[in-house]
Amino acid sequence: MEAKEIKEKAKQIRRWVLKSTTAAGSGHPGGSLSAADIIATLYFHTLRHRPEEPDWPERDRFVLSKGHAAPALYAALALAGYFPTSELMSLRKVGHMLQGHPSVKTPGVEACTGSLGQGLSIAIGMALAARLDRRESHTYCLLGDGELEEGQVWEAAMSAPKFKLSNLTAVIDRNRLQIDGPTSEVMPLEPLAGKWKAFGWHVIEIDGHSIPEIIAALSHREEGKPTMVIAHTIKGKGVAFMENVVSFHGKAATPEQLGQALEGLE
Ligand SMILES: Cc1ncc(C[n+]2csc(CCOP(=O)(O)OP(=O)(O)O)c2C)c(N)n1
Image (cartoon, rainbow, N blue to C red):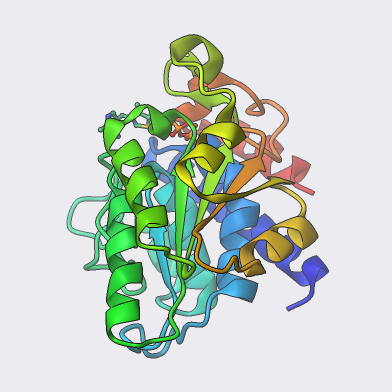
């Protein structure tokens, strides 16, 4: 799929993020909107996958470590054909499939996430398994920058280069905000690229809303090293009244705000 078409998929993902979280009256729009272009590029360009055969052994794996961005993941899965888009409006409803955080019970979801800090370790396990099984599968993992405060991330950061996991690509959604405010105030992360380089990763920094830059970064392979993509993004991207606003981390647009939010999407 061409960059222009992927951008259109990202827009559709943003529409569903807004509609589904407003219908639920809760959920995490801010971090879902910042990740929409990355997730769209994964599902509509990069991943080798078969929506009609979710358990295809040769598929690439994607672990959404920042599991609270589930509304964006669910929208991508539905648009890719894993389940009907009508399911999206039952987000977070008791007795329905699409809960607040991802579960492997949902077709296409590779790992149960939401308790931050665990996804990179899971992805490393998947990458090691692919190597043992001699599968071509590549593993991708998306982390939040606030999530990097979890100590387990840094254990994983040490181990992936030790195992020379060139079949692993992680992405940090570097939107500079977490639940309580700017990461620079809650727990400073810089020099972020230098930290990952020091741990032995190949590091690429991109504009996380540029589809061509995301495509290029996700397709990069480094001999004997895992790749870390630091994607600079805007939390709430696409909705003027949500952009860089901390409170929209875990607050949906009201039904009154929804029309304005949808109209403003580019
Ligand atoms: C172990 C754990 N601690 C706390 C939380 C609550 N929590 C949910 S999202 C979040 C902030 C995450 O910030 P970031 O990773 O930057 O996500 P983004 O801004 O991209 O949405 C926190 C603390 C959690 N889900 N898991």
